[in-house]
Length: 65
Image 1 (cartoon, rainbow, N blue to C red):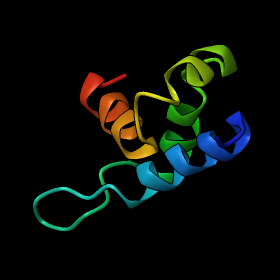
Image 2 (image 1 turned 120 degrees about the vertical axis):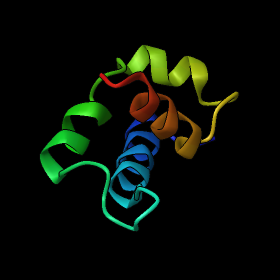
Image 3 (image 1 turned 135 degrees about the vertical axis):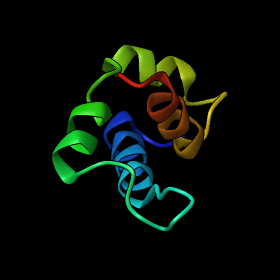
Image 4 (image 1 turned 90 degrees about the vertical axis):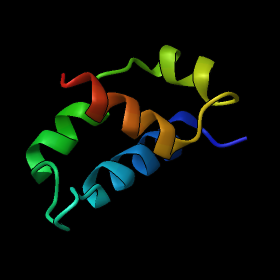
């Protein structure tokens, strides 16, 4: 099992690589960094066994936070 910091970094990486249908990045570096901090360490630790970092990134993007 990964630690929370590694997991959060993988979520950030997934956020930074998210593109729209035209191949453009969906969010800026700053927005990705903010979204990656949206969940607390405890929330991430709880979900790590159930969601991949990519799934978490998709949830954050889809939520429009």
